[in-house]
Image (cartoon, rainbow over all chains, first blue to last red):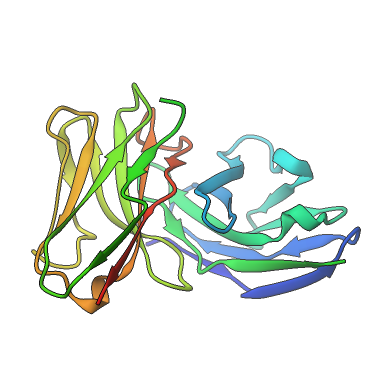
Amino acid sequence: AQSVTQLDSHVSVSEGTPVLLRCNYSSSYSPSLFWYVQHPNKGLQLLLKYTSAATLVKGINGFEAEFKKSETSFHLTKPSAHMSDAAEYFCVVSGAGTYKYIFGTGTRLKVLA
Amino acid sequence: GAGVSQSPRYKVAKRGQDVALRCDPISGHVSLFWYQQALGQGPEFLTYFQNEAQLDKSGLPSDRFFAERPEGSVSTLKIQRTQQEDSAVYLCASSFEDRNTEAFFGQGTRLTVV
């Protein structure tokens, strides 16, 4: 069975400071892991994905995530937050040989001016 | 098309009414998925098509929910005799393959049952 836990439902940061959104996963197989962002009234947009290549994954808009098997984590980071980063972020796991996405409950990121 | 298109964007239905939600996937995408996103929650899997074949419908909450993709492109999710607990955003996604590939999501249809 697969599952994903997003450890924070809300995160607030000041503009220009680092962002850390935490995600832990559980998977019986080598997982594929994704981070999606959802802006209000917009569709889910892929930020980045891990599919058993490099453990440090770089995505769009300056985001990156590191796959740590020993910690079963896939935390999302960005060195400097921008106002436009304010949105809902979802960590997603999909196990090898399966097509279903298992979503976390989401983390709402608020960026303060 | 340029992306996954869903219609209508918003639907208000009276309890007991039947509704039909449409999804136009990206041209050439083999796989199509439906997800349900309740308020404040992450999306949850409903059903999966590979071309016209519905390979997995394990996430459909009840037999009032029915999905089809008769020609392997456009898909329709139908909900019969809607109930208040059906209120949610219904998301459609498509991907070129079925495994370990990026799924592209539509903007969703927000269904409100009153």
